[in-house]
Length: 253
Ligand code: PGA
Image (tube, rainbow, N blue to C red):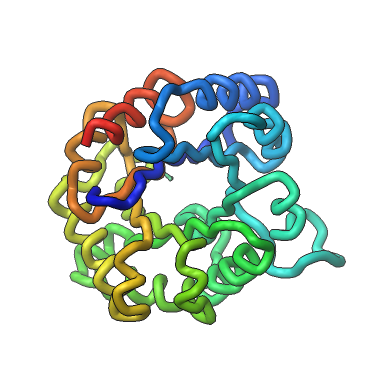
């Protein structure tokens, strides 16, 4: 992972009730770690973001939103703006594959969300990744490049400190089949080379996470790869023991 501080992020998706979320937030906030080596971040279900954020007060745990809308306020029933999340969050995800594939979000919309998140003063975790058929067609790099370019449209080099990229192959999410460490490294290395192509040397400092069936068992081999700066963890983040084991794996690489 080199000199870039690792990030271990938990994506709780639409799981856990209010009390379960607060309890897990409290437990994750107490995971012993060196914040200079590993940053901890959780994305609770939207309804409980504020409650978990309150639970994390006074700790190093960062709390993020799983999604937001592009407009700051107005007649957009059911949506949450980046400005609203900025009152309770430090980070917001944009373009998670479930947003892209279940809710039909376009590359352009994801880019507008990144703009809104940065505009509200938060860090954007931009998720990219190919489907199985795109991989089988040999298009994995082209898809990821298209998602990166659109996702970062209008983002300047001076804003890169507020960008994290998560490479999450769709076929590895929630399937129990993670990418091999070699494939994950190749794609995260590709993301980094594209960031350098877009932004020059500063692009190399952006944290690039791997996501997709990360577990305590495979975390060490994945996180040891040169261009993998951490993990975006779904299923294994719903339990403090497995999340702690992944944090420990990150600290040990
Ligand atoms: P998973 O989910 O770890 O359960 O595969 C990862 C994600 O969707 O971010």
